[in-house]
Amino acid sequence: MLELTVNLDERSYPIFIGKSVLQDKGRLIHHIGDSRPVIISNETVAPLYLQGLLDSLSDLNPLSFIIPDGEQYKSLTWFEKISAFLLENNCGRDTCLIALGGGVIGDLTGFVAACYQRGVPFIQIPTTLLSQVDSSVGGKTAVNHPLGKNMIGAFYQPQAVFIDTLSLHTLPEREFAAGMAEVIKYGLIYDTELFSYLEKNIKELQSLSEDALQHIIFRCCEIKALIVAQDEKEHGLRALLNLGHTFAHAIEAQMGYGVWLHGEAVATGMVLASELAHRRNDLSRTQVQRITQLIADYSLPTTIPSNMTSEHFLMHMRKDKKNKKGTIRFILPTQFGRCELVDDVSDEQVRELIAQ
Ligand code: NAD
Ligand code: GLY
Image (cartoon, rainbow, N blue to C red; front, side):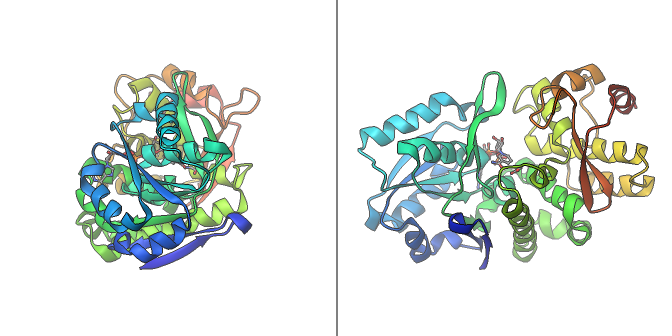
């Protein structure tokens, strides 16, 4: 088992990564402490992993609450339903919420934890690749609003993150590929060695080799922990984690949430960001081709939806959370393995990029 720490002074916490991490009952109980565990999961993940967890925690008299599966349930309605369940069961401040599922469950549970009785501890047990390398680490919690994704939320850190690589064996291939987009992102923003590793280990990763999985998950969590420790509330550096996301959010919003998975949209967004960087003389044509090839090798899309125009992109990108004073801001690779936030891309440059 691998272990690392997210260093945030008194809010520091460990991340455990490995095969059968969830069977380490003693470690789980240690991090729950004196609290009563309440597990939040969904209708897909619960039949696979809930009973094992309930058995491990049986001495602590655990409760569980299951929500339907889907991004649309990351909502104020389900925030309210979970809160009502906790109140009906007389859950006090000595409650520890446990998020068992992908990023939807993690973000929703974390936001309830941040607000319930002004804050109770919570533990992340991410079960998708995307949530293991990204959403379970760093304390961004949120629900969606009909007018925008993740628009209501809080920065609230978990007590611990338990990443069991075995859970990836039940994950649909398309969801695994979507998680790989975020893994590729870390290579592009921070770590050329990780990028080369991904190029050399496509078969190993797609066949879920344990060593390869642990290697990439550990490295991604390590990079994210380094960034979050320096810029927890995204005043600067943390924004780099949004490489490809300005374009991606436009694709997701235009196509309708769930039509393209977030990671798929990020994959195409990274190709667009790399192409834009090339046009600004930052990346060579060969480097753009290398990035595009790696994304395609992991069965991810590299071209925009055929029915999307530059005006669709601009309309959605004008609402991006990173914008300042009406200017659209992009994260672009300035060299291989390094990115920067830029705010001098004109609408005309976006139109030319999308047109081609
Ligand atoms: P998800 O939570 O919807 O999970 C994807 C699908 O996989 C779901 O159908 C789920 O039920 C299923 N699933 C989960 N684990 C499984 C397993 N082990 N076996 C079989 N099926 C399994 O999606 P996601 O990609 O994990 O997360 C997306 C969400 O994360 C979005 O809401 C996004 O906004 C959020 N997000 C948050 C952050 C953050 O920093 N907080 C970062 C990135 C994304
Ligand atoms: N997923 C981006 C972040 O956590 O900042």
